[in-house]
Image (cartoon, rainbow, N blue to C red; front, side):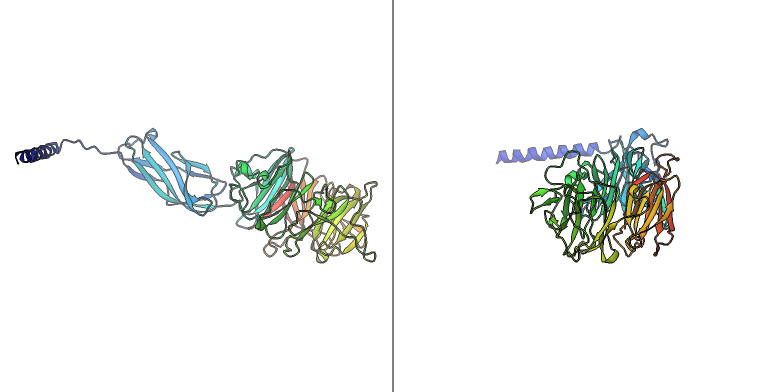
Amino acid sequence: MILKLYKYSIILFTGIIILSGCKKDLGNYDYNDINTLTAVINLPKDVNAIFGKVLSIKPELKFSLDPGFDESKYTFEWSYIGSNGTGGIKMFVLANTRNLEQVVSIVAGTYTAYYTVTDKASGVAYKKEFRIKVTNEINEGWMLMCDVNGQARVDMLSLNSSGGFDVVNDLLATTGSELKLAGKPVMIYNYATGLLIGPDKISFGIYLGTDQTTTKIEPNTFKWTPTMNLSYEMFGNTPAGFYADVIQQRSGGAAYMIGKESAYFYERTQNIYFSAPISYIAAEQKEFKVAPFVAGDDLIVSNAHAIFYDKTNRRFVKHVGSSSTCTTLPEPADAQKKFSFSTGMDLLYMSWVPYNGGEVFSVLKDPNGTKRFLARFNSASLVQSYYDEITATDFANAEFYAVSPALGYLIYSVGGKVYEYDMSLKTTKLVVDLGNKKISLIQFYDFKSTTKYKDSNNLMVAFYDPALPEGTNGGINTYTVPPVMGDLVLAKSFSGFGKVKSLTYRER
C-alpha cells in the first residue's frame, strides 16, 4: 500500500512540474512577420495564346518585406493541367523563370494554369491560378515538302480566319519541333491511320520523307520523338537506308507504302502492319521490283484493291483485300483486248481517276525506242478502254504528268510549259506558259472530304523562279480545267516558299 502511494505521488509531482514549466514558458517566443506575396500585377485571369507563336507574360510581384524585389530570393514555376495522352490529366511544367517567354507548343484548347513563386528563406509557396486559351493558326492548309539548296524543308500555306492562306516558312522550326530533316525531299502525306503501335499514341499520320529517312510527326503540335520514325511501324528487319517513296491511303484505315522498290500493306482494324513486302507473286514464288505508283480508289470499301506495276517483268499486277501477296492480271478475251497486261514496257506514270466510272491511266515507254503509249483500264473489272501511241507535242521531254479526274485529259509539263492532250482527237494545247520559271510538280489533289473541299478538279502547278533567292522562290498556281479543251482559268496563286516537290492538305 505504501509503495502504491509513493508511485502515485511521484506521478502527481512530475505532472505538476511539467504544467508549471509550461506556464512559465508562455510569452517567451519572439513572433516575426514573414515575407508574404501581396500582389501579382500584369497576370490576367484569362491569357490568350497562339500555337507556334511566342507567349510573353511579365508579371510584377509585390512582397511585404521585399519592396525592391530581389529576384534571387525566389524560385518560379509556370505550369498547366493537360491531357496525359491516355484519357487522364497531369500537370505539365512550362518554365522555371520569373517571366514566361516561350513559343507555344500546347494543343489548341483552354487550360487551367498556375504561376508559383516560392520564397527560398521561408519555403512558403504562393500560387496564382489563371487560364490559357490556345488557338492554332497553323491548324489547316497545304503542307509542302520543299527543296531549298538541295535540302528538304517543310513549308505551309496555313488557312487563316478570313479564308486566305498565310505562308509559314520552315514549319518545323517555326513550331519548335524537335525534328531536323536531313537529305533531299521525297514526299509528304497525311491520313487517319487509326491508333499506331509504339509509345507515341498517334492516330493520325503526317509523314515527312527524305532520301535518308521517313517519319511522322505529332499532327497538332508537330512535335517529334525518335520513336515516330517509320521503322517503328515496320515488323521484321527494315532494309538498310530505307525510306518511303510513296504512302497512300486505301479505304478506311488501310494504306500502301512503296520503298526500296518493294510494296507494303497496312490495315489497322485487322492489326496488319507493314512487314513482309506484298510485291510477290505467290503462284510464281517470285518477288518483283515495283514502280513508285499506287492506282486505286481510296473510297471503295467493298472489293478494296490497288494496281501496281511490276518493273522486273514489265506488267500490271493487283493486290486485293488484305492478301499478303499480289496476283497477275488475266488477259482479256481477244474481242475485248486492246493491249497485254504484260506490256513489256517501262512505266513512266500511273494513276487511278474517277473518269469514265473509275479507270487506271498509265503512260508507258518502249524500252527500245522513244515512243510513249497511253493505256487505260478499269481496276475492278479489268475491262480495257484505250491503248494507243501518244502523239502530243514534245511529249518525249515530259517531266511531270497528271490526269483530269473529270474530263480525262492527259496533262504534262516541259520546263515552264504545261500541255493538255486529248487522246480521242489526238490534239495538244499549250495551256500554261510560265516563261523562265521551272515547274517542279503538277497534280490534281484528291481531297478526302469531297463535300467540304471542292477543288479536286483544279490543276495545281508548282513552280520556282531560278532568279529569286532560294527558299522563297517557289509558287503554286491552281487552274480550273474547262471542257472541250478550253483555256485554263487561274483560280488561286501562292508564292514565297521553297521549290515544291510534294504536297498534302491537312483537312479539318
